[in-house]
Length: 544
Image 1 (cartoon, rainbow, N blue to C red):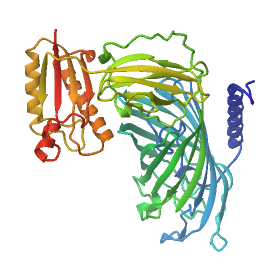
Image 2: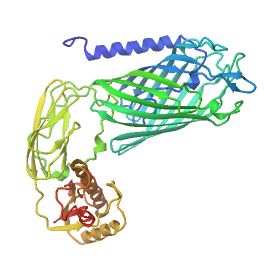
Image 3: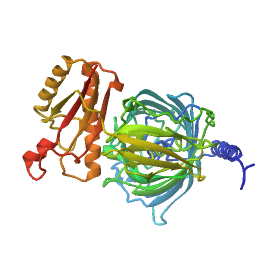
Image 4: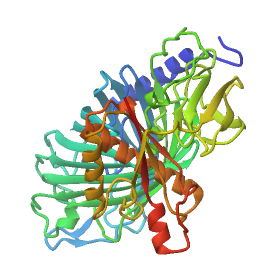
């Protein structure tokens, strides 16, 4: 027992047993419609998005349990006349519960099982015919996700699932239909602080005979497509937008292909309630067409993560300066986006540790702090001096020398401090100014026009020198706010750094990128020509 209640392990076991009981109940229930055309199907691991699959893998040994309720209005499509396919303006509503579990077999493979369960449904009293839907589980959906490519926050995965239908007299499948196979490719990547994902797939369907009382026709093979965007809303919440579509490859008996298609737009939020529990909510709407999707839907759900307790490391914390600073690689903002999947928040109970506790860095550079133990979330702040630090532990040094003290506090109030000495770079043996570095507007990665030629000339020059080390300094003009320009100068310097490492065959530790933003102009920013001169990259070259 822990103070104030059950231990996390016992609570996790009770949650696990509850989910198993719900699954057993779902396998004893039956429904008679909806299963294969379920348009709200939450992803089983809850990572990044809500219904769109993230290609990021679930960590090895981790479980993800989720349960979602949704209430949908005007779900069913009903033909008034089957021969002419004249459609009724059918009014109905339903409440559904989705039960899902996923497990990480390895760092690239996860298994999952989903059970959508109809809780209630009824049609308006003046509807004719008045279609009644039996409550219960309408399909069981086992499957797997294999993440076959993981590279620099870009992931690609193959997802295969099958709907084993637990339905009778279903007009969308026909009687005695074969299981439905869903095969998808998912790609997930990040641009700035936005996570993006695209899912493209094929749904194989072998319908059975049309039920005698059917008011729709069975469906055949479909293309399925969905896409999502997700971004930080606050320290513990992310916004999500998604688009979900299906379209028939073969219309079959349908005159209008849209009668056999579905289209949904989703707007939602993902909140981290506690360290391993997420709360999701939102709405879906049908985007101006009548398809096999409800007019609108509201939903809410919980995603609970349960995994192995991290091993406690007993490495001593030493006050050893990090010298040279170029051994600490420059990172991009997007490398540290906290994705609200609950996994990064799995608690590691113990003493709070912060590393490094002392470091010397160059002005305008970055330093990444690593925090372990304690209880997340961690909160960083500047106690003394200048600079910036975010809640991912990324410290941005000021553009002038000095001393800075930061501290980190965990959710239990434990606190640790670190001291950073910010120094000016040493005098260079040679300074090469790339004064014609024209990046495309608002870009840190794409050079424009003559900039490539000037860069090539600098590379040829340095090949003739006995280069030991290079410091790449990025500078901007004064358009935009200070923080934006500081970040832009850092990213532009990093772009040039990567080019020199690759083209000059230098060790990554021999080339450092720092940014000065708009702080060190060489000309006035009041004219176009002056601003152009200030948008530059200076190379500090040190010989062997």
